Image 1 (cartoon, one colour):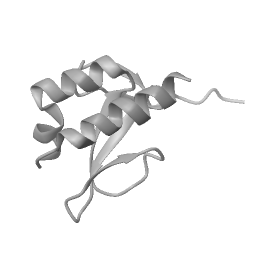
Image 2 (cartoon, rainbow, N blue to C red; image 1 turned 180 degrees about the horizontal axis):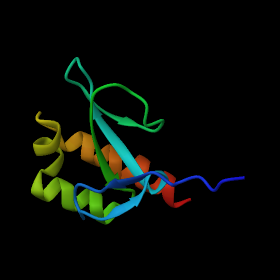
Image 3 (cartoon, rainbow, N blue to C red; image 1 turned 135 degrees about the horizontal axis):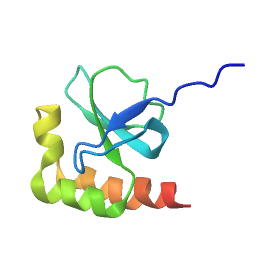
Image 4 (spheres, rainbow, N blue to C red; image 1 turned 180 degrees about the vertical axis):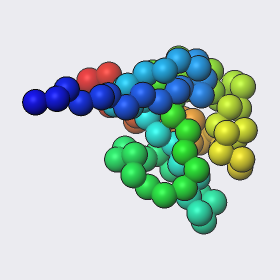
Length: 91
C-alpha cells in the first residue's frame, strides 16, 4: 500500500510549515463571525496557528488574526484560545 502524504499548513504567526493536525484553524465565516474550527472543514476564510499558549499570545500582541482574516478579532476570542484550545491540545 502507498504511504499517504501528510498535508502541511503554514502557521501565520511562526511561518513554519507543520502537519495540519498540529495546527488549529480559525475561520471567518461568510456571516463575518470569527470561530475556532476543530474539524477544519467549515467554510470561510481560514488561518492556521500552532496550538500553543505562547503562539496565541504572540498573535494577540501583534493582532495577526485580524490582518489574516480581514476583520476585527476581539480579545475575548484570544482568551478563549488560550484557556480552552491550548489547554485542551496539551492534554
